[in-house]
Structures are given as structure tokens and as C-alpha cells.
Amino acid sequence: MATTGTDARAIPDLLARRGLRLTGPRRAVIDALIEGAAPLTVAEIHRRLRAARVNLVSVYRTLRLLMDLGFVRLADESRGTQRFELAEAYTGHHHHLVCQGCGQVEDVEGCWLEDKMLEALNRRLRRARRFRVLAHELKLLGLCRGCA
Image (cartoon, rainbow, N blue to C red; front, side, top):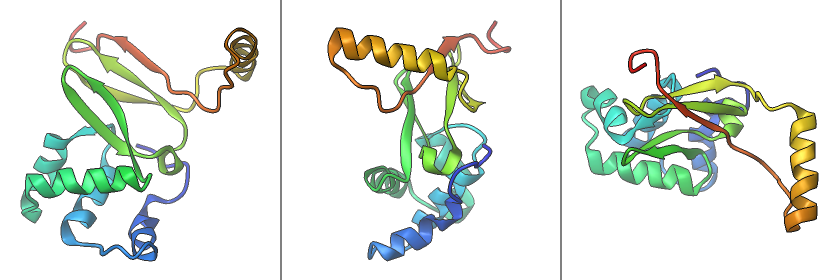
């Protein structure tokens, strides 16, 4: 995953500034997410940390903490599996391709929605529903090359 926002390697320092310890498992989960090329499941993160001997409970606890602090987000929840990635502040704005066959999630760099389209949608929603769009996420569902 290309990091176009704030450098994710700053997350350990940000934890310390909030009075939280940088434990080995926390460091390992953060590193796995930084190195991940796409959103990862808990099982995928855990497999990557096998050599570091990080237990599954620590992965879950660390992800929950990092989500609560806004460093990590739930990228997708389909086929009964959750996939996590660094928050957009660290990855830059992007969207996802989700395979309905195998559940693979792939990042699509940048935003493919044109500013004019977003402005028109925002105007329409403000008039019809009195709703103001502040941000958006786009998930395109289909079949990956292997499943097609």
C-alpha cells in the first residue's frame, strides 16, 4: 500500500504521546499493517507475526485499540470476515475492489470519483434529505482475475 498521507511510522510516537506503551505485539501489528499491500484479516496479521510469537488475543486487542485511537480502520466486512488497514491519514484517500468469489480486497489508489460528481451528489442530498456529505468510501464488488 502506498502511503501518501502522514508517515505511519509515527504511530508508535503518537501512542507514547497518549501515555500508551509500545509493547512488542503493538509494534508487530503496526508493522504488519504498514507492510501490508492490501487490507488484512486478523488471521493474516496473526500469520505474519508467527515468528514474533504474538498471540491471537493480542492481535485483536491491538487492532481494537488502534481503531479506537483512529490509527486503523475497518476496510471491509464481507463474507463474514473483517479486513483492517491503516486509517486514510496514513494511506491517502483510496477505494477498494472486493471479490465476491474469494473475498480478496484490493486497494484502488486515489479517488476515481470526479469532484463535479461529488459536488452534484452533495447538492442533491442536501436538498432532498438535508444531509451534508463530509467524506465517502467506495467499494466496488465483483470477481477478481482468479475467480472470473
